[in-house]
Length: 333
Image 1 (cartoon, helix red, strand yellow):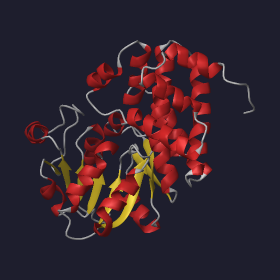
Image 2 (cartoon, one colour; image 1 turned 180 degrees about the horizontal axis):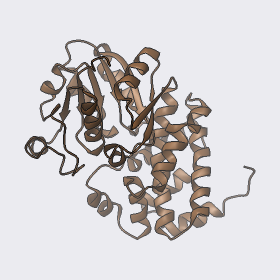
Image 3 (tube, helix red, strand yellow; image 1 turned 30 degrees about the vertical axis):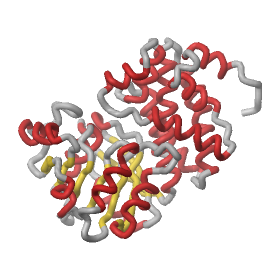
Image 4 (cartoon, one colour; image 1 turned 60 degrees about the horizontal axis):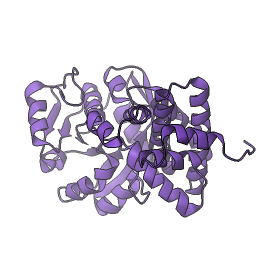
């Protein structure tokens, strides 16, 4: 087996930590960057991530740090695993510490407020410090990845060679990696499914059954495809792991933060309380607003996303939301 490149995983949440553990077990030297200095100290002292992924020891080749300069200095590959809303800021800081272009992998699943995708943000900020950008997305719950439960994902890039590099980097017996060239579709699938996961949580929180969730997910997928194709994605991408696969996992799993947001809303909890109790970013919340902005700009009909936004804004109750969706004008599928 060829020697793996050194890697900097930027973001020590549950997802970044799980990826760092996977890469280290494969034999890579991994710098795991945490913005919070206290968290970095605890990672070094306790040999695990007690805040976001407790119970999973960090291999000796994982080196936690709160110094971006230290994390990226020797890294041949950079993996961005920070929330989409923090991606631009972190990338701007990273740029100052990169003497030469690097392979960059985005593991973020979300959109900026104007609808910019993570790869677009990285390309615009890193520019000449970027050798190639790859996006990683799929039905990948961090806890299950850390448990080494069989999991599959997609790495997409406009460069087939870069996608192959990422595939080789991550592929292992518990993590099957497929390549794809449709960067737009893979990123949109990973971001937009979080919006529907909020809706699935609302459905479950109201005590509805599988009929209700199936209708929500299926019609929601139709919305995702409409928007994705309008933005240049390939329709078939949304039938794959980063589309239907990720949507299924996020909409049915109680481990999903976005599902938990919806479930809390259905229980009558204020959004601020739900997010505080989560302790981590639920990407579906800001993504809902970004998606609705994009849909309005492009003239794309997305009634489910718009209704979820209204619930997040407390303009209507979950009960009203369901009634409005069910009583929309009849139409063909």
